[in-house]
Length: 101
Image (cartoon, rainbow, N blue to C red; front, side, top):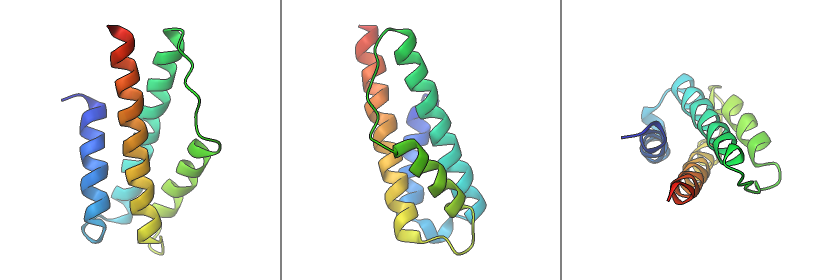
């Protein structure tokens, strides 16, 4: 599996079992997902395809990653953010793949 596919699976699994994931692991997973989104966007841009991002999405994900790394992070927000990030990675992954065809 690719890094993107692995991250999508890990984000989904973590979102559904947040009580079993430490705050440190939550923050690291979100940071990794953010890095993958940035890399995918750069790849698409190099291919000449600019994909609009939802307003504030990446900034919100950074804030969420900081929140997730704290003991007092709000689980429902962290879980929802993880699923949103997984969805964005999947969307960009599909665009990258379609572009290669």
